[in-house]
Image (cartoon, rainbow, N blue to C red; front, side):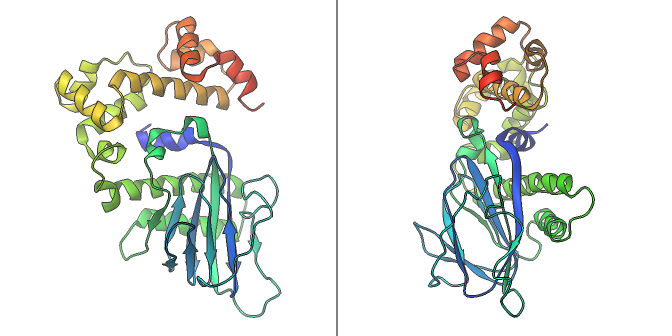
Length: 313
């Protein structure tokens, strides 16, 4: 798996939520801050405004995509002056929530003025990939001819599947939500906003050498990588690669390798009942004892206790 694919696979916990929601003016709705989550809104029809607690309102039109990587609160409305309704639930709870399929003000006459595709993802707040920590509080991807064609296709497919569920809809919607998240991140990192950043993961993913080394680590974390071998993948000398990697990623190559191995192991413990020895070998540890020591240093608990107390049954 490549870096962005891995981020999607490891970052999310539980099932994502989504809905196609119709609004009739006047309308305004607050979406509360939900720590350990990420949310999105897509304008499918009509227009609306994003109301931010710390910025000017933003006018939105058909095709605009909003992504909130850190679960911060915001509001949506037909006008910046419309009063905002307060939520009475967690939008990602197990009940209907704000992201359940719903039509607002169903008794009102006339067609819906605005249709939004909205949803959210539960994240592991303590073990988020550093890529996510570098993202801004809001990613706004405006619609435009020829822009983000893959993202638009995923939005269209997801909206249609939610509006008219068919056999296998649960699996299709869950897969499309992960695809949507991947396309949002890809659009950000490959777009002008990502490229204009002076350092960090955006620049690392755009750097052919560093990206090749990261790709190698993510595709085969069990390989006994050395700095020299990774430097060869990057087309750099050992010292030049180590310096460049540290500048962009924020930690030395082998330190990142260890972090990624243990993050992958934690994910495998959450997602499967494979024996710890098998998981240890899968992420590059020939000794279960060495794996347990490394895991405890990083996570503060032994792998067995992590699986019993932290992982869902």
